[in-house]
Image (cartoon, rainbow, N blue to C red; front, top):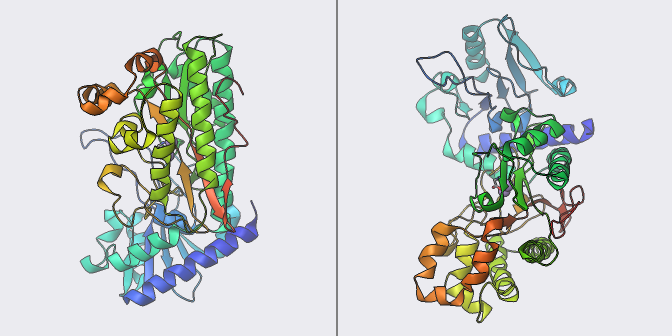
Length: 442
Ligand code: GLY
Ligand code: MN
Ligand code: MN
């Protein structure tokens, strides 16, 4: 990735921070990276470290106990701890060249570091982040001031070219894992745990480094939207859903593929046809994701198209419109069409207003704009907890239950890509590196 793009990104973030400070009466911003958090006060183990996104936005250092101070018109300052412990050491920073834009100061102990941060930041500093150790050095009304936080989150909804490239690299890295898992699945019976480990090895990730816990689901487990209790035994299941990403420079991809081992004319063939239909619908939704379109309208359009698919694949009968209004499509597709993506998997500020009540799990209610990056991830699942109650209502009469039962062993399908809006058009960051089609092969 180019140094010029990062330099441009940094200038943009510093300008945005300065504007946020100026409009809210602050003169400096303090961004702590955070510290290790103890798993229990009766033990000495910590949770894996996750750096605060507010600091990572400026510099993706990922280092515990570091703190950034941004002051208008000055080079940003980075305060780091000297790594003197003989117990452990953080991994070296992979993008050392970025430090050239910072005034770097290194301290032997936390107390001296914090005192220096407070001195440099001055009396009119806003501290943004969740690190209580740093925040308590500042007056209450200086901690996460709403005006500053809101402005910075708003800034993060329109990615710089550097961020889009980081997300593309994160997508390419995850693609290698998805391909390896698909190859292992098509080669023979494997357990979910096995496939999860194949993914980690192929992407050179430790489990704690993945942007979110991998979802690896064989057969009926694909109906559990966040299935992370990996089965330990190889099964005869013919379907596999993998929802997994990878990080790059603090940014994370979020990709789902659904694979199926076809049979000649049996249920697996019908399932692959359905996977193919969801895949085509997903591509049509991506093509429609252009500036000015309301993301919630896209989600509504997904329900309309899903209703037609249910009828065409003999899972339901009647007018597609009626399947939407009666709530049938929501029983098959209960989650949102997607969410903003960036330093956080469910990135901040994607939902400036709540969705309509029937779309309650939708995490993106913005109007699409240039620079946004979001997922498009429609799905269709056989979730007993939603279908059983539906069966007992009049709307349940629209469902063709015999076909639902025949396909239920495949669990569900979800197809998820990461989309950047660049110069008025959607750019799919993840599809070409991992084909999907009807899921019956790579
Ligand atoms: N992997 C979580 C999601 O797709 O939102
Ligand atoms: Mn997602
Ligand atoms: Mn996902």
